[in-house]
Length: 98
Image (cartoon, rainbow, N blue to C red; front, side, top):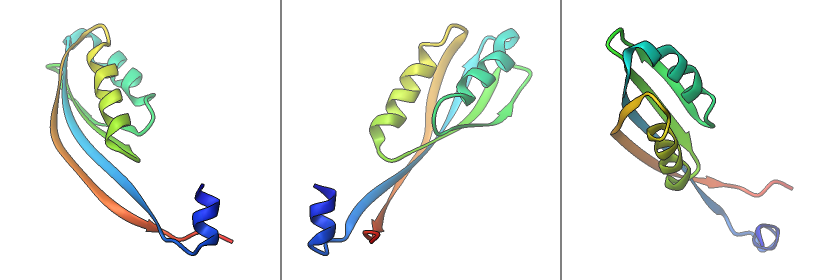
């Protein structure tokens, strides 16, 4: 379908989503959980405190993978909570490549 739209000269709209979270963990597991969260697609760890708080950003092409990542983080043993602090999305126009 994308190829048909490109051949018709239609400009495609794509979304880019960024969310930030504070993840509260059991302090003794904070580094292990930071490493595990960092393996999720689009996840980046920005800070790890001695008290077990992690600052995490998630990036993705839509809200769905962001929410799936938050659910995955909340399901990790040792995670007490993952609180969404900020969410933004932008629409990007993607020109078809010939």
